[in-house]
Image 1 (tube, rainbow, N blue to C red):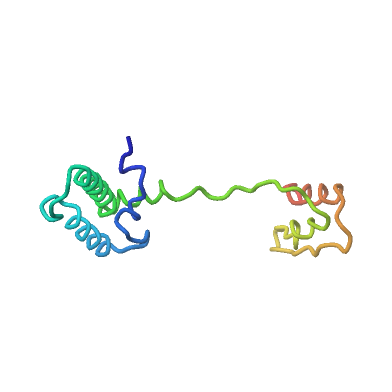
Image 2: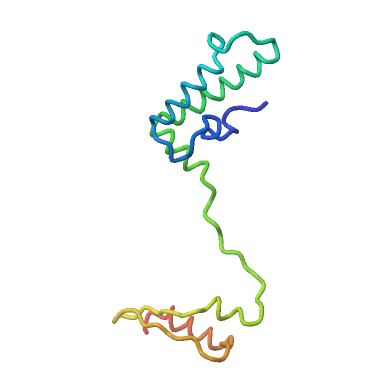
Length: 137
C-alpha cells in the first residue's frame, strides 16, 4: 500500500520547495478543483478511484505544507543528509590537492604554512599533526 507520506509533497502540488504560502494555497485550490468528485466531471470506476487517490495525496500534501511547523519538520526530513568525507585512493601528486596550504592556529593568530616543493613524508605529516594537536605549542 502506498501512502501520501512516501511522495514528495512539493511535487504533488507542483510547486518548488521555496514556494510561498500563497503559491502553495493556489496550487492546492487548482488541484482540489481538478480532482474533487463534485467538480471533476463524470469518470468511470477506475478513473474515479485514481482521482480519489490523487485527491488524498493533494490533501495530505497541503495539510503538511500550509502549516509552518509541519512544513519545517517535513523539510528537515526530506533534506538529504550532509555529504560524508569518503576515503579515496591516492594518486601520484594527490597530496598537493589534499594538503594545499596548511593553516595552524597559534595564540597570535593564523599562520599559513606553504607547501614544500617535495612531497611530504609520513614523518613530516605526523610532525605537523602533533604540532597542531599539542596544546603546549
